Image (cartoon, rainbow, N blue to C red; front, side, top):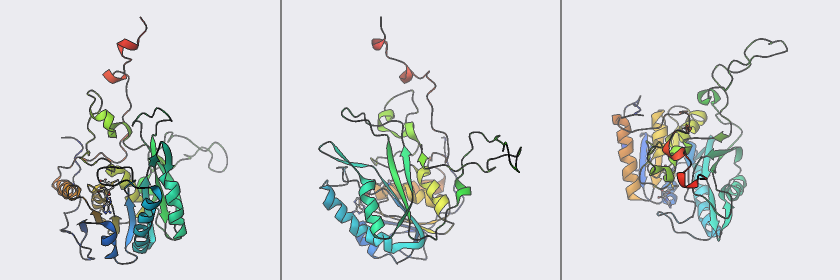
Length: 317
Ligand SMILES: C[S@@+](CC[C@H](N)C(=O)[O-])C[C@H]1O[C@@H](n2cnc3c(N)ncnc32)[C@H](O)[C@@H]1O
């Protein structure tokens, strides 16, 4: 089997209640109730993809205002639990009603700003495939709002640098003329992340001869790629820090944190997702969980794949 990642650290004991003495907390229940039991100023990183109110199997669609009102109560708790030097990464897409698009990050921005959080990046998570719209341009990105609670925050750029396109570039004038102009550790990954693109989408799932199954996919309809979270974990936290995913689904953020020896806490209300999260965590520690490696280049079609060819029926005779 490919893409197996061997853990560098032993599996901590999993408990379902918050406790400073433990490193792995997975709670089944409503997130608002759970957050109430967490101490102030604890999480160095809160990273999540909340329900978008778009009628997925785990949510009941309501109007945008009542959805946001419910979320505000949760966000009050999250801001309380976030450390003063911590970061919050909020990954969202669009809410759509009567064909009108409501970009959720625009609505959420004000909610966080009102609570004093400071935006550091609006990251674009770009995917190459998805549903094909017929009355507007097809959506091919979602966003991650990265906020900090104060000016005093961690940003470990060196741990997430990516290879430079032209590492051989040199200064062509000035006192450093002739010396390499880049950074030997690579370049800043920028605010556009083309993580997993093609491999992730459902539509490719069923097509033979294309890289079919993403190694991490479970039954969850909108799961995080682990590497997306890993980049935030490495850049925004240090070993042993607490990472919280209040809507943890099948545990992708928890695995990303555990992989890098952070303490993790997650909550989800769906028993089946929590069960899968626990299984994935245990598979990670037994070395049997397939994880797409961080920074692996996105698959680029060669043109030779069956699905890259123009169908015979479309060719002019
Ligand atoms: C977008 S998904 C997150 C998926 C997750 N990032 C992963 O990689 O699996 C949102 C999750 O929120 C959970 N959820 C929705 N409302 C909740 C609530 N009130 N309390 C706890 N979990 C909730 C859903 O069950 C769903 O798994």
